[in-house]
Length: 71
Image (cartoon, rainbow, N blue to C red; front, side):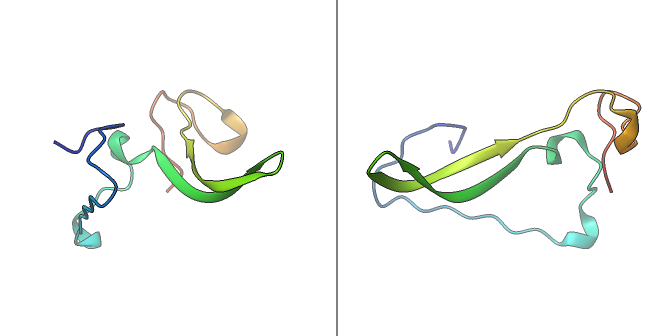
């Protein structure tokens, strides 16, 4: 119901909570990050989302397999 890019209306709000001791930080579904940021394009300003994910080998960071994490 609350999938990626689903429009729910101007006032829709949703939240989740977890017991952090029960979360596996190395589970591949936890690698995708969203960061809220202020953005400027010319004279226009707003709020946006920067999405990041690291998949694959990067030996300098210790990522040796497809879904190695940085925990």
